[in-house]
Length: 226
Image (cartoon, rainbow, N blue to C red; front, side):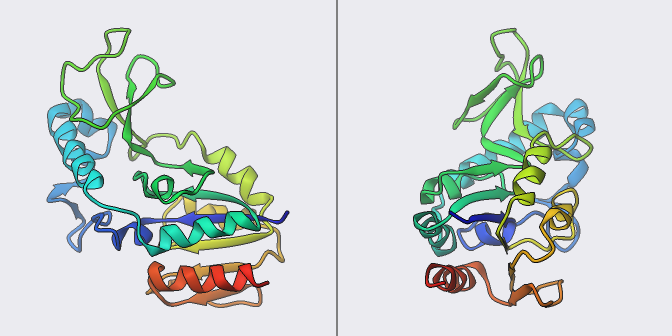
């Protein structure tokens, strides 16, 4: 069975109503990115950080997967599929995809400051005073700016094995995720789906200048009838 690796970014979830990463001013929901997505911001004002992610968690629980998410599930009928996502939402899971690597963490999980391997499912608000069993404050299970990406090595090893690579809704300009492209085999077919692609077509790279809800079904249809 051929292996398909799918890299997804904010663009696939934007159509579900998830706000994309930052606005034109570089702000995220009105906040400087370093205030709410860095260890420094957390140390300076943990309440602000918790409030920020509580709002994002509520928003996530109010939206649903879209056609782009659902279309990817069909590929599992014919291929061994791994989704490597930069998104912290659970929309791939809710759509029914079964093998997902979250490079940047998960919004519906929290982890202990004392033991980063102590990770808990969490759907409610997280507040100061919510402690793990070691009496240590819980924090969002999100990879912040300046932190290591723990699953990067796993993502690299899986990308190296890809027979086909699909990229959806990500500019592939942000590292370390953008670096995954260099780990594919030289002749691996690549499909790049994005309404404003910042990448050029090559012999092995097909560019689909569309949003996920229309571009993904087209690629899936092609691959299912391949």
